[in-house]
Length: 510
Ligand code: NAD
Image (cartoon, rainbow, N blue to C red; front, side, top):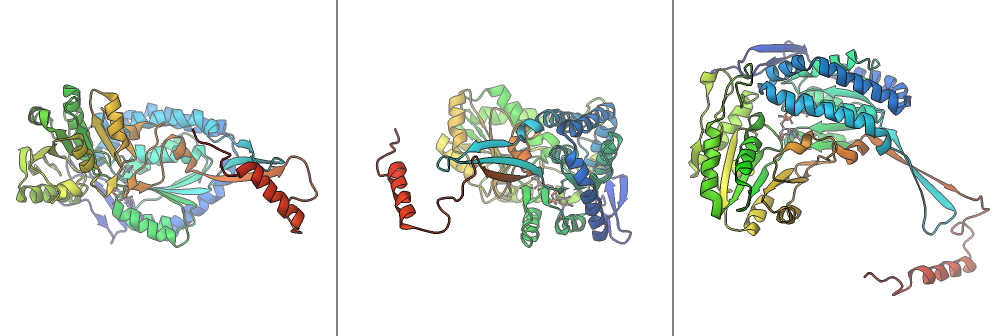
């Protein structure tokens, strides 16, 4: 590798972002110091009450104004995303700008309904009524990665704002210009000063945000950093949502719709150069169709156009985002080959293309002694293993410390759901790959080491509010039966009530 990595120049206290396809400098930003992070949180804190006091409609108007700004400036935003990540403009538009526009519509028009207060009565305490109300948390911190530098944070920012919070957002140090573009987009839409603060920097800035006086952290990134954040947050019981890594399995049954499954596997493994938390990172195909399926996948992979994003959708797969990520891919592929894996496509770095390129790679003869089958690769590598039975496929899929997303491919939806029900993952998609992160209505979350908490969907919006329970009497009484003084008379009444309501054999489950 001849290229210099994206660097964090501590001496000048700047982050410098490079275009990973050309290694040219894109932008440089001052690293926000811990004191400046605290000042940003203070400004957000001061701005939040007025923002939280606005009606849902007033907040929605601003969000829809952001949507309109984005509509007008989509080509500029697509170019910035593509410059800092190397992803093809098609992906920047389809998986980031388009999908997050949908999220804006969804939460601008549905947040009020979802967060509506709920009143209910209590079964035994007939004189009591309860109500749940949902209040903003205050100031939330959003820390995001580089792989979807626009849609991940903007989605969280929009949900936080619709719930009445102010936000302090720290973009990845690899995509600061996208972070700055987000700030400018919201400013142009008229967001009141202080309601959205953007702080720039690396892990130290992120750590300062976690240690600041924010009310909750929404973190998306690696398991390693997620654990550090959890440790730091535990010191003051700061609530956190962690959306972490994956090693997502794809199960291909012998009755899978052939052409769709081949294309789905290739898109699922190589979209965004495989740098998606929900990328297909392990594929288990059933024996009867294995040879034909693998040959078709290899043929399709060899058609992928790799290179720097050009005009007119001239490439399908861009570079890895940085030298470290390229190093992980090289390490996983060479480890697998040294342990007996066979390369059917790709397998090589392509420095001749100008940046951190690695060919889309298909591996067979893989096993669990190889890093490529156990650790998150986060690159353009598709290891394929042949399995004999449905049972074996399920057991292989579950044999992982991760549990983010999985997919099952079969012509029989009922069979698909049966298999899906036994897979340990936050989401299991039948006959599609990785796309549901982009859908505003569907919850996104991981199990096992893939995360804590939910983003997107109704459950995701509830992460941005504090539930408050109100309770009152319908008719005023002098005393409740469980108050002082404790008397034999009331003791007896409790026993009589228990006999009436809970005696043995009273309730039968059909
Ligand atoms: P990363 O953990 O290195 O960094 C993520 C963010 O955390 C960056 O902004 C970084 O500056 C910041 N950070 C680093 N150290 C920190 C600290 N000690 N305290 C606070 N913040 C800190 O991850 P990455 O390389 O940017 O992203 C890739 C990872 O993200 C992959 O593992 C991928 O699977 C995961 N990811 C998960 C999801 C999901 O929804 N589950 C989505 C996208 C990416």
